[in-house]
Length: 150
Image (cartoon, rainbow, N blue to C red; front, side):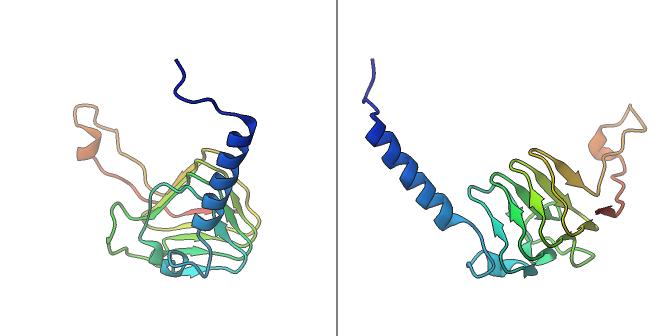
């Protein structure tokens, strides 16, 4: 049993409302959330909906860069964490980060100008140790190495 019938007009209305919400909730350099970033270049945008974004002050985004919807961006492991370097995550000019991707920096991730990623790409500068299989991963070293792409 259907609770309601979706007509073409209803579907078009829902689509128009969703497009308005996504455009209104996108993060740009002049938006309240955009001003939290260490740098947020003109013409750049983070599309809505987002997932986890924290410690924005350690994240720098260049000019004319588009970051797709459902992308996670973070510097450190938890909100409010003091990081050792600044920026921790740097995304250059004219980049495109595909939807569903994750960029999680702990030390240094530098994505150069004109870099495009596919959807669901994960970039981090930290790995989980697994040399001693008798210990849980959480009890082993978590090596960090700077990452540079492009």
